[in-house]
Image (cartoon, rainbow, N blue to C red; front, side, top):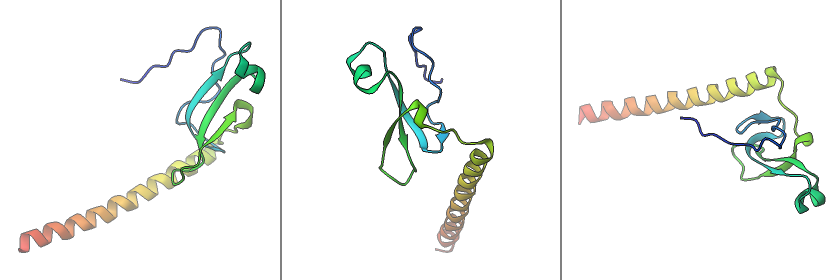
Length: 108
């Protein structure tokens, strides 16, 4: 079952989704500053996004909706296929290790 997020009807719908890949990284979270609140007066109202620039970093950025650029379909395709290639290589390495392990167990 997919988790459900409820957004109050008087809030605008966010432009980006959780786990969406963007030019700035992957969206890990989002929050909203409603107009008329102290935070909105200090930082502007609207959606804010928590992004991780890459998976190998503990760096996190917090950006407003207008600071985020979506990936083009071509860029998204390239990112996903590169990730698939990486994991296929990892699977191949693990399969070879498993083969060596099982051959050693059968000979012992």
